[in-house]
Length: 410
Ligand code: SF4
Ligand code: SF4
Image 1 (cartoon, rainbow, N blue to C red):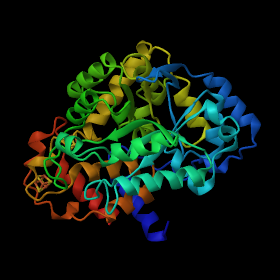
Image 2: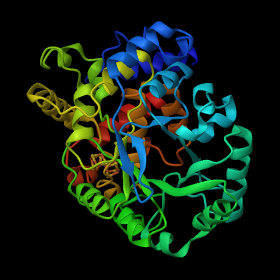
Image 3: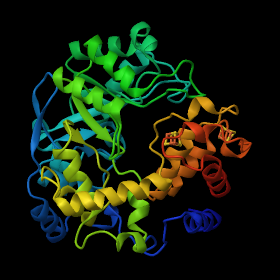
Image 4: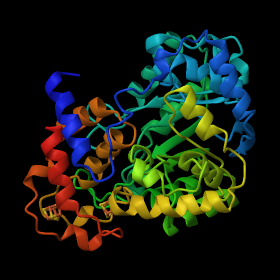
């Protein structure tokens, strides 16, 4: 990170209502831990134990209640495998650095997913292309050396139901690859495009996913889900469960990263209760979800969060979650997209707030700034008309947040 970017990051966090810098500069990332550091890995895995598994979709595969990701550090990956994680989202990213030995030596015990993006653009303006997707997956199979991928994922999903019905390129690419034994199941991660200024006739994730189930080609899906009321998505999850369609929640820790940096907030939680642990307990026992993604960067985060998997939240966990929810609702966007269509300036509000979450909650400032830089329209054209805030269920100060984010990300 350049000096000026680092400085801006500090200012951004200082101006944010809950962030306190203490602890950020000294955080230990997974990469700093040697994969050979057996004692740290053993200590974390013995605290977590072996994660429960659930049957996923029509295949009935037994998949860990928390799934891993191909971009986890080697040490965290090793610990995750020891905790029983057997499903790897973004396994295609191992094209760059190779498949971790602990997975490769027991290839058949793991489910590895190739994540496929649109071509000739991003997930808004890119297109689906049968041949290009087919060729990409073939390359990924060869370069990773995995032999096949268990799942082929359409990254970011469809823009609307009409696109699902009329553009079968992705499904055709999958069917060709399946005949060759290179992929087994079809899945997607679905974002909400309702009201998006960047696609025509965008629809909500729940609406598109419900049609995906009726369409019958996909086995399971990832989508954004966290604490707080989400009736539309809850209805979809119930429908998915009744129809043997697999469900994985992602972006589950709304606002938690920034709260953990706020010592005043943390002191209000019941003693010895970790918000991430309480969240994992709730997501894995009190919902109909099959499994979840919860990003961890180091051994202590893994130990803290994953040790809650499959355990019922106690009274104090729920007390902590209620405090977390109230705090998040003051500042952390739910990415529901309800404000999008209201903006006469066509500012991609949800995207900008998603990038803010990368910065504030994942502390991935570089990724957030790079994504913000790539936006065709940014927060600086906001006219402060406040039309959007009337649609926001959290009544967030959208123009104020846009101004702050623009100042420190551009
Ligand atoms: S306040 Fe800004 S973001 Fe909100 S609708 Fe007006 S111009 Fe768009
Ligand atoms: S700003 Fe409000 S309405 Fe817009 S996506 Fe976030 S929570 Fe939803």
